[in-house]
Length: 163
Length: 163
DNA sequence: GGCGATTGGATGACATGTCAACCAAGACGC
DNA sequence: GCGTCTTGGTTGACATGTCATCCAATCGCC
Image 1 (cartoon, rainbow over the protein chains, first blue to last red):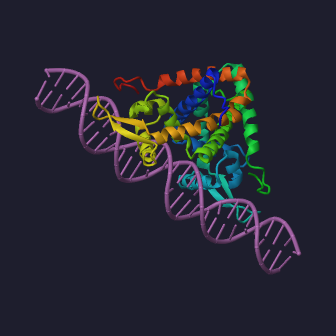
Image 2: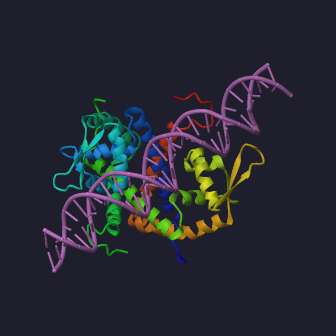
Image 3: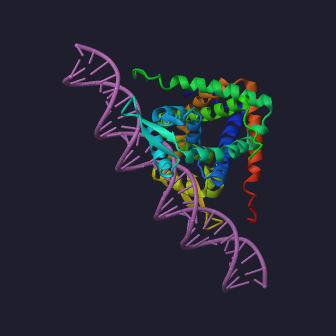
């Protein structure tokens, strides 16, 4: 790795700022979330994704893909959430191997109780500190990066010829 | 929480993009780092922060503060890194309670071997996908957010009258 | 319709992170 | 100097995440 292009001052500032912001924002959002709603960020994400579907139900693997989680992680996490009464598992009619994750009424209550406060926190500590142009730019470049990264990865449900 | 201002389309796009980018970028950077250098991201961060000091040595608490880690987390992690020979602990001359974390030659080698590849990956999957104006904007708003978040938190080394 | 390959999901062992004690040493008031 | 309060760091118990493995059900192909 001889001809490495190191980061210039501007890039270094951006990269460090990004990472520090991430960390602080995570800490703060997680703190408020547990305090106000008794949920962790992963909890919130699961409930949020579920609640965005019409019936509050999703195949486990579908949910895992949306969240970019491994099936294993999700399965473990669901077991814990299930014990708290936030979700349940149902059998899948069309594929007997499959599991359907279902939002319980308690889970629905939990996310509805948490959502407003969480969005407010996201605004207060992040979005509202940005100018409209910055928000626009953020949307633009994050999606560009996502598209780029989504390519290398997961050559769609296909033969595993990669790498 | 009646009058919640929910996210408009632009904000929602930015927020989702941000979170998805984070996740994908983490996965990819961590993947390359372990593969090419046998280090996790936390490992890399510890080594990187240490190597930025003139002597490759830092008080444990100072390092923890820089990284925004709890002392406990750092202590555990150092124990593991120490077992791999990447760092050592020394007694602190001016404060007998204190511990000084020291980069070993092997640790120095490890970070030097990893750095170029990591920076290249950061460029390839992130910075180089942004226009100079976007990099500039990223540096600007992340630091703004960091400053904001740093305020609520940690009322400096002072009496603990908070909250 | 039967057999090997793949897939969906669960599980156990292990790595990592958090939280709440704990302990020794410094700081401070007297 | 000596109680008491705080601080720096470690530790153990526990929560969470990862990885490899396993099993049953589906798929493909004949």
